[in-house]
View 1 (cartoon, rainbow, N blue to C red):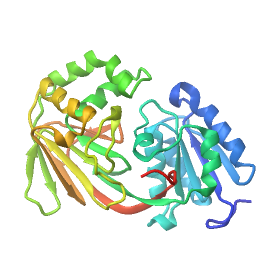
View 2: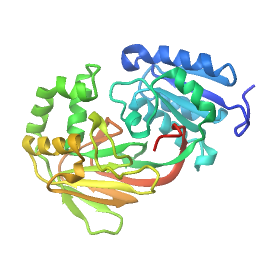
View 3: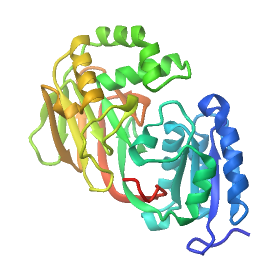
View 4: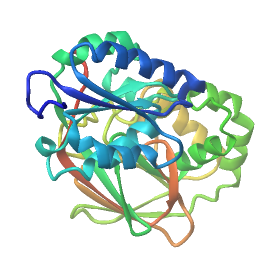
Length: 313
Protein backbone atom coordinates (compact mmCIF):
# COMPACT_ATOMS: atom_id res chain seq x y z
CA UNK A 1 0.00 0.00 0.00
CA UNK A 2 1.33 3.43 -0.95
CA UNK A 3 1.44 5.91 1.97
CA UNK A 4 -0.63 9.08 1.66
CA UNK A 5 1.22 12.24 0.68
CA UNK A 6 2.35 14.07 3.77
CA UNK A 7 2.82 10.87 5.83
CA UNK A 8 6.04 10.37 7.79
CA UNK A 9 7.28 7.73 5.34
CA UNK A 10 7.46 9.00 1.78
CA UNK A 11 6.60 6.98 -1.31
CA UNK A 12 8.73 7.17 -4.42
CA UNK A 13 8.24 6.73 -8.14
CA UNK A 14 11.62 6.36 -9.85
CA UNK A 15 11.61 7.08 -13.59
CA UNK A 16 14.83 6.04 -15.32
CA UNK A 17 16.16 6.52 -18.80
CA UNK A 18 18.09 3.22 -19.03
CA UNK A 19 20.38 4.40 -21.84
CA UNK A 20 21.45 7.64 -20.12
CA UNK A 21 25.15 7.93 -19.39
CA UNK A 22 25.94 5.11 -21.85
CA UNK A 23 23.72 2.72 -19.94
CA UNK A 24 24.78 3.69 -16.41
CA UNK A 25 21.32 5.03 -15.60
CA UNK A 26 19.75 1.60 -15.11
CA UNK A 27 22.40 0.47 -12.63
CA UNK A 28 22.14 3.70 -10.64
CA UNK A 29 18.37 3.38 -10.52
CA UNK A 30 18.58 -0.15 -9.12
CA UNK A 31 20.97 0.95 -6.38
CA UNK A 32 18.69 3.83 -5.42
CA UNK A 33 15.61 1.59 -5.41
CA UNK A 34 17.28 -1.10 -3.30
CA UNK A 35 18.15 1.37 -0.54
CA UNK A 36 14.94 3.41 -0.55
CA UNK A 37 12.62 0.41 -0.41
CA UNK A 38 14.00 -0.58 2.98
CA UNK A 39 11.81 2.13 4.52
CA UNK A 40 9.51 3.40 1.78
CA UNK A 41 7.14 2.26 -0.95
CA UNK A 42 9.09 2.42 -4.21
CA UNK A 43 8.23 1.76 -7.84
CA UNK A 44 10.89 1.79 -10.55
CA UNK A 45 9.84 2.24 -14.18
CA UNK A 46 12.02 2.61 -17.27
CA UNK A 47 11.40 4.71 -20.35
CA UNK A 48 11.56 3.23 -23.83
CA UNK A 49 11.59 6.40 -25.92
CA UNK A 50 11.17 10.15 -26.09
CA UNK A 51 8.09 11.35 -24.21
CA UNK A 52 7.77 8.24 -22.03
CA UNK A 53 9.02 10.01 -18.89
CA UNK A 54 6.38 12.71 -19.29
CA UNK A 55 3.58 10.19 -19.69
CA UNK A 56 4.77 8.11 -16.72
CA UNK A 57 5.08 11.15 -14.44
CA UNK A 58 1.64 12.43 -15.46
CA UNK A 59 -0.23 9.14 -15.08
CA UNK A 60 1.57 7.47 -12.16
CA UNK A 61 3.02 10.46 -10.34
CA UNK A 62 -0.17 11.45 -8.46
CA UNK A 63 -0.03 8.16 -6.54
CA UNK A 64 3.31 9.06 -4.92
CA UNK A 65 4.75 11.72 -2.64
CA UNK A 66 7.94 12.03 -4.64
CA UNK A 67 9.02 11.37 -8.21
CA UNK A 68 12.73 11.00 -8.98
CA UNK A 69 14.04 11.41 -12.52
CA UNK A 70 17.13 9.31 -13.28
CA UNK A 71 19.00 10.24 -16.44
CA UNK A 72 20.11 13.42 -18.14
CA UNK A 73 18.71 16.94 -18.21
CA UNK A 74 16.27 15.85 -20.92
CA UNK A 75 14.81 13.17 -18.67
CA UNK A 76 14.48 15.69 -15.84
CA UNK A 77 12.64 18.06 -18.17
CA UNK A 78 10.26 15.32 -19.33
CA UNK A 79 9.42 14.33 -15.75
CA UNK A 80 8.92 17.98 -14.83
CA UNK A 81 6.53 18.34 -17.77
CA UNK A 82 4.47 15.39 -16.57
CA UNK A 83 4.35 16.58 -12.96
CA UNK A 84 3.23 20.09 -13.91
CA UNK A 85 0.06 18.46 -15.26
CA UNK A 86 -0.61 16.73 -11.91
CA UNK A 87 -1.95 19.77 -10.07
CA UNK A 88 -2.25 23.53 -9.98
CA UNK A 89 0.32 24.36 -7.27
CA UNK A 90 3.49 23.03 -5.68
CA UNK A 91 1.49 21.60 -2.78
CA UNK A 92 -0.78 19.61 -5.10
CA UNK A 93 2.04 18.10 -7.16
CA UNK A 94 4.48 15.36 -6.13
CA UNK A 95 7.93 16.66 -5.19
CA UNK A 96 10.59 16.29 -7.88
CA UNK A 97 13.97 14.66 -7.30
CA UNK A 98 16.88 13.99 -9.64
CA UNK A 99 19.69 11.46 -9.88
CA UNK A 100 21.94 12.68 -12.72
CA UNK A 101 23.11 10.11 -15.22
CA UNK A 102 23.51 12.01 -18.49
CA UNK A 103 26.45 13.61 -20.25
CA UNK A 104 25.82 17.34 -19.79
CA UNK A 105 24.11 17.43 -16.35
CA UNK A 106 23.47 21.18 -16.22
CA UNK A 107 21.01 20.67 -13.37
CA UNK A 108 23.72 19.00 -11.30
CA UNK A 109 25.83 22.14 -11.30
CA UNK A 110 22.88 24.50 -10.99
CA UNK A 111 21.31 22.84 -7.94
CA UNK A 112 24.07 20.73 -6.42
CA UNK A 113 22.47 17.33 -7.06
CA UNK A 114 24.60 14.33 -6.11
CA UNK A 115 25.43 11.72 -8.73
CA UNK A 116 25.92 8.99 -6.10
CA UNK A 117 22.76 6.87 -5.70
CA UNK A 118 23.77 5.65 -2.22
CA UNK A 119 24.37 9.18 -1.00
CA UNK A 120 21.08 10.35 -2.50
CA UNK A 121 19.18 7.50 -0.85
CA UNK A 122 20.69 8.44 2.51
CA UNK A 123 19.84 12.12 2.15
CA UNK A 124 16.36 11.99 0.62
CA UNK A 125 14.44 11.19 3.83
CA UNK A 126 15.76 14.40 5.42
CA UNK A 127 15.45 16.63 2.34
CA UNK A 128 12.37 18.81 2.32
CA UNK A 129 11.05 19.96 -1.02
CA UNK A 130 11.97 23.56 -1.78
CA UNK A 131 9.56 25.44 -4.09
CA UNK A 132 11.31 26.56 -7.27
CA UNK A 133 10.23 28.68 -10.21
CA UNK A 134 9.31 27.00 -13.49
CA UNK A 135 9.24 28.59 -16.93
CA UNK A 136 6.36 27.75 -19.28
CA UNK A 137 7.20 28.11 -22.97
CA UNK A 138 4.47 28.17 -25.61
CA UNK A 139 5.41 27.40 -29.21
CA UNK A 140 3.76 25.57 -32.08
CA UNK A 141 0.52 25.43 -30.13
CA UNK A 142 1.93 23.47 -27.17
CA UNK A 143 3.27 24.29 -23.71
CA UNK A 144 6.69 23.12 -22.52
CA UNK A 145 7.85 23.69 -18.91
CA UNK A 146 11.53 24.21 -18.15
CA UNK A 147 13.58 24.31 -15.00
CA UNK A 148 16.90 25.54 -16.40
CA UNK A 149 16.91 27.78 -19.44
CA UNK A 150 15.48 28.52 -22.85
CA UNK A 151 17.47 29.97 -25.71
CA UNK A 152 16.95 31.30 -29.22
CA UNK A 153 19.75 31.94 -31.68
CA UNK A 154 23.41 31.06 -31.20
CA UNK A 155 23.19 28.68 -28.24
CA UNK A 156 20.29 26.85 -29.90
CA UNK A 157 22.44 26.44 -33.02
CA UNK A 158 25.20 24.87 -30.90
CA UNK A 159 22.82 22.53 -29.09
CA UNK A 160 21.06 21.57 -32.32
CA UNK A 161 24.41 20.64 -33.86
CA UNK A 162 25.48 18.56 -30.86
CA UNK A 163 22.14 16.76 -30.72
CA UNK A 164 22.47 15.90 -34.41
CA UNK A 165 25.74 14.06 -33.73
CA UNK A 166 24.66 12.28 -30.51
CA UNK A 167 28.17 10.92 -29.92
CA UNK A 168 27.37 10.44 -26.25
CA UNK A 169 29.29 13.59 -25.32
CA UNK A 170 27.08 16.61 -24.72
CA UNK A 171 29.00 18.59 -22.14
CA UNK A 172 32.28 20.46 -22.53
CA UNK A 173 33.85 17.28 -23.93
CA UNK A 174 31.18 17.12 -26.61
CA UNK A 175 31.77 20.74 -27.51
CA UNK A 176 35.49 20.10 -27.99
CA UNK A 177 35.05 16.82 -29.88
CA UNK A 178 32.49 18.34 -32.22
CA UNK A 179 34.18 21.74 -32.56
CA UNK A 180 34.53 21.60 -36.38
CA UNK A 181 30.83 20.87 -36.85
CA UNK A 182 29.79 23.49 -34.30
CA UNK A 183 32.00 26.17 -35.82
CA UNK A 184 30.69 25.27 -39.27
CA UNK A 185 27.09 25.63 -38.11
CA UNK A 186 27.85 29.00 -36.50
CA UNK A 187 29.59 30.22 -39.66
CA UNK A 188 26.54 29.30 -41.74
CA UNK A 189 24.02 30.78 -39.30
CA UNK A 190 22.96 34.21 -40.54
CA UNK A 191 21.89 35.53 -37.09
CA UNK A 192 18.57 37.10 -38.11
CA UNK A 193 17.22 39.76 -35.73
CA UNK A 194 14.99 38.66 -32.86
CA UNK A 195 12.33 40.97 -31.42
CA UNK A 196 12.37 40.75 -27.61
CA UNK A 197 9.25 41.84 -25.73
CA UNK A 198 9.62 41.56 -21.94
CA UNK A 199 6.85 42.63 -19.55
CA UNK A 200 5.95 46.27 -20.25
CA UNK A 201 9.45 47.31 -21.29
CA UNK A 202 9.89 48.70 -24.80
CA UNK A 203 10.75 45.94 -27.32
CA UNK A 204 14.43 45.40 -28.12
CA UNK A 205 16.26 43.76 -31.00
CA UNK A 206 18.92 41.07 -30.58
CA UNK A 207 20.52 38.23 -32.52
CA UNK A 208 20.64 35.75 -29.62
CA UNK A 209 18.55 35.52 -26.44
CA UNK A 210 18.75 33.40 -23.28
CA UNK A 211 15.89 33.20 -20.79
CA UNK A 212 17.54 31.78 -17.68
CA UNK A 213 15.98 30.36 -14.54
CA UNK A 214 19.46 29.42 -13.22
CA UNK A 215 22.89 31.01 -13.52
CA UNK A 216 24.81 27.98 -14.80
CA UNK A 217 24.01 26.35 -18.12
CA UNK A 218 25.55 23.89 -20.57
CA UNK A 219 29.31 23.29 -20.90
CA UNK A 220 29.91 24.71 -17.39
CA UNK A 221 29.18 28.24 -18.57
CA UNK A 222 27.63 31.07 -16.55
CA UNK A 223 24.88 33.33 -17.85
CA UNK A 224 24.57 35.66 -14.88
CA UNK A 225 26.03 34.96 -11.43
CA UNK A 226 22.95 36.24 -9.58
CA UNK A 227 20.31 34.38 -11.59
CA UNK A 228 18.16 32.39 -9.18
CA UNK A 229 15.30 29.87 -9.53
CA UNK A 230 13.86 31.18 -6.26
CA UNK A 231 13.36 34.89 -7.04
CA UNK A 232 10.22 34.79 -9.19
CA UNK A 233 12.00 36.40 -12.17
CA UNK A 234 13.50 35.23 -15.46
CA UNK A 235 16.93 36.59 -16.35
CA UNK A 236 16.71 37.86 -19.92
CA UNK A 237 20.15 38.04 -21.53
CA UNK A 238 20.33 39.26 -25.11
CA UNK A 239 23.27 39.93 -27.39
CA UNK A 240 23.88 41.54 -30.75
CA UNK A 241 26.30 40.84 -33.56
CA UNK A 242 26.76 37.87 -35.86
CA UNK A 243 29.35 35.40 -37.06
CA UNK A 244 31.68 32.81 -35.63
CA UNK A 245 34.07 35.33 -34.04
CA UNK A 246 31.20 36.97 -32.17
CA UNK A 247 30.03 33.57 -30.95
CA UNK A 248 33.56 32.74 -29.75
CA UNK A 249 33.72 36.07 -27.90
CA UNK A 250 30.45 35.35 -26.10
CA UNK A 251 31.50 31.78 -25.38
CA UNK A 252 34.80 32.90 -23.90
CA UNK A 253 33.09 35.21 -21.41
CA UNK A 254 30.50 32.57 -20.57
CA UNK A 255 33.19 30.02 -19.72
CA UNK A 256 35.62 32.35 -17.91
CA UNK A 257 33.30 34.74 -16.05
CA UNK A 258 29.70 35.22 -17.18
CA UNK A 259 27.86 36.05 -20.38
CA UNK A 260 26.56 39.32 -18.93
CA UNK A 261 30.13 40.64 -18.74
CA UNK A 262 30.67 40.41 -22.50
CA UNK A 263 30.57 43.47 -24.69
CA UNK A 264 27.22 44.07 -26.42
CA UNK A 265 25.23 41.94 -23.95
CA UNK A 266 22.15 43.31 -22.21
CA UNK A 267 20.69 41.88 -19.00
CA UNK A 268 17.30 42.49 -17.41
CA UNK A 269 14.68 40.47 -15.55
CA UNK A 270 11.06 39.80 -16.44
CA UNK A 271 8.12 37.55 -15.66
CA UNK A 272 6.89 37.19 -19.25
CA UNK A 273 8.82 37.31 -22.54
CA UNK A 274 7.86 36.93 -26.21
CA UNK A 275 10.46 36.28 -28.92
CA UNK A 276 9.64 36.65 -32.60
CA UNK A 277 11.56 36.87 -35.87
CA UNK A 278 10.80 37.24 -39.56
CA UNK A 279 13.34 34.49 -40.33
CA UNK A 280 13.83 30.94 -39.01
CA UNK A 281 15.53 31.08 -35.60
CA UNK A 282 16.15 27.82 -33.70
CA UNK A 283 14.98 27.40 -30.10
CA UNK A 284 16.17 25.04 -27.36
CA UNK A 285 14.67 24.27 -23.95
CA UNK A 286 16.77 22.68 -21.19
CA UNK A 287 19.33 21.60 -23.76
CA UNK A 288 16.92 20.02 -26.26
CA UNK A 289 16.05 21.48 -29.71
CA UNK A 290 12.31 22.21 -29.79
CA UNK A 291 11.65 24.10 -33.03
CA UNK A 292 11.68 27.67 -34.32
CA UNK A 293 10.43 31.07 -33.21
CA UNK A 294 7.98 32.52 -32.27
CA UNK A 295 7.85 31.59 -28.59
CA UNK A 296 6.16 33.05 -25.54
CA UNK A 297 7.50 32.35 -22.06
CA UNK A 298 6.06 33.11 -18.65
CA UNK A 299 7.50 32.28 -15.25
CA UNK A 300 5.41 30.48 -12.62
CA UNK A 301 6.94 31.28 -9.20
CA UNK A 302 7.35 28.44 -6.68
CA UNK A 303 5.64 26.01 -9.06
CA UNK A 304 7.07 22.69 -7.83
CA UNK A 305 8.88 21.35 -4.78
CA UNK A 306 12.41 20.31 -5.75
CA UNK A 307 14.28 17.78 -3.62
CA UNK A 308 17.65 19.49 -3.49
CA UNK A 309 20.46 19.05 -0.95
CA UNK A 310 20.13 21.25 2.12
CA UNK A 311 23.46 22.94 1.40
CA UNK A 312 22.60 23.80 -2.23
CA UNK A 313 21.00 26.85 -3.81
